[in-house]
Length: 173
Ligand SMILES: [Zn+2]
Image (cartoon, rainbow, N blue to C red; front, side):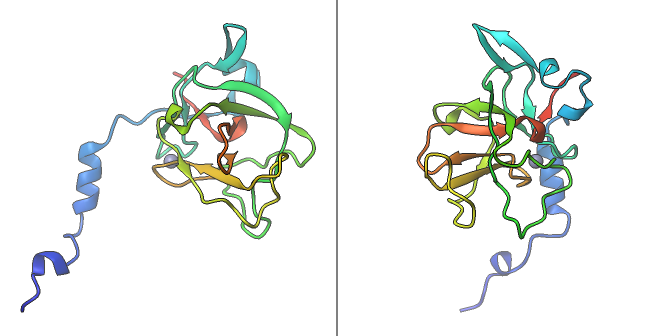
């Protein structure tokens, strides 16, 4: 039996790039929260008594810009910060450090299922992090396209998905 060169060889150089550019969408402009003069109030709006995200939430990596969540799909909540970084892995420079526990921090809360997201990736439950306030293991959220994260967290089996307001890009202008 001879091996079929079609299946044993690597794709020709440049094929993946060609595939990617042919399917690429117009690149979206992603602004960090820190670029807005009035911070969270510039990127939120009041909808039916809830503070929702005024813009689509994007991957914070400018070269990626994948849509994580459509505008209006999350509610802003101020709650106690949470450790979502293992202390032995340096945080990506595009991801601002979160306030240390138990200081409060601003989050975009998405419920009740991950179906609300456009694109998001989930880690497995992370053994090396402290448990959530209700004693569950944490799963971390990342960009589904380029894996940049953690952008937020959820509990194992939970129905609440929390994105750090400072760790997503905003599709403004
Ligand atoms: Zn990305």
